Image 1 (cartoon, rainbow over the protein chains, first blue to last red):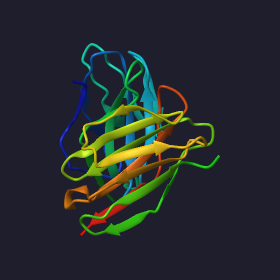
Image 2 (image 1 turned 30 degrees about the horizontal axis):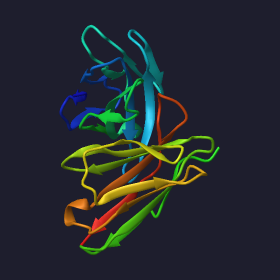
Image 3 (image 1 turned 135 degrees about the horizontal axis):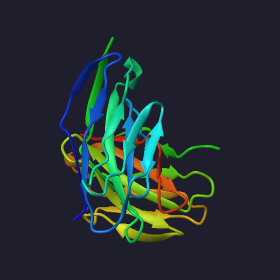
Length: 113
Length: 111
């Protein structure tokens, strides 16, 4: 079945450090890929998305490129801030068939000043 | 444009009771999905409704049910609550096949 695997957390970095959170997927069709962020006590917010191979999604300094050859969608940011502390979820959704999101297990990110 | 609204935000129920959660999607969105979030199982898909019809269902027991009204508002119901049903229940709405927008969730605690 369709699945998403994220790098295990938690991840702790210092402010202004470079961030990478790995995400790989398995899908039977051609998925759209997403990164969602969840702040404490909140729901999920869409951070960025990519709908086809080689697309790059970007938002708030975060980027991720849809790599079909490696079935990956790694999240990167060049210089993290304390306010980036949250849980990050990689997810896929198939355009055809079931309109549901399949999530990775989430990666808790803590940024220290 | 108002976002996805879920009510109530917090609920405490006793084992064996039933509960109904409500979700109002973004105006114009006809698809509403429900997800359960727990520390152990993560985010799991419950079901999706589109134009008042259940279009997809996840792997949950029949105690979990839902419905959608003509104005696209949706409710989910859990009967005969168990301790393991304690979770954050998230509702998401979408207008097309790609991104979904989530509400803040309803935190259900079963005691």
